[in-house]
Length: 251
Image 1 (tube, rainbow, N blue to C red):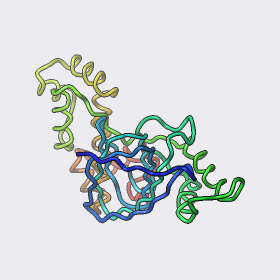
Image 2 (cartoon, rainbow, N blue to C red):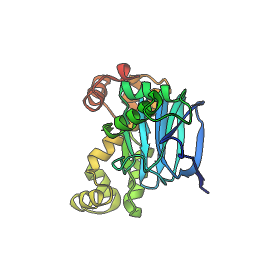
Image 3 (tube, rainbow, N blue to C red):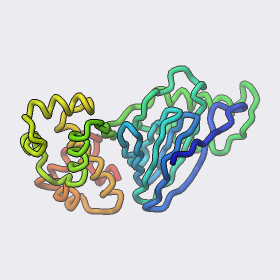
């Protein structure tokens, strides 16, 4: 059963909130009547919605539009700094769930906002900080940390199996044979259901599983081999292509 949390934006456009989660913590299905930017200073958070799920690595954030039902699961010690935002504060706030890069400026603004009063004078420093936060939210860079959720039972079952066995060699030939359909039909149905190629979905599923395992302190070599990569270097090369840095540098 989901719950809906409500906030008062009569005197300010957003409400900041700080909360630390222990490893393994969860939050059940719930929603907010406002938009939410959840920013993590440490640890990894998995956010699940009815459209798919997102993995939020350290120093990144996830944007949830108003009314989005979601639940979360925590890996590692997570220091979360969240903004609950009036959905009418700006006309062009993001309209879909997405994992985002939180700039150094936005991170410091979020931390500073925790000390701001709920009421402020027009033209004051406090007002400028609130408005600058909204400006920075509008230009956040979107990151490839989501897995769309298919609705067709056959494709959904395939995706569940990929997530359960991420180290298996998931070629289109293997997947098509498992569903008793041609590779061409599988690829067409999969893109219709997820908006992604099957190979890209598998790669993202492995990357997101890797982020969770690395956050738990598993070695890069162990994660690489468990997820089907031939070597530490092959996994690190994929990681660097996607995120711009090696796994050890990232964490």
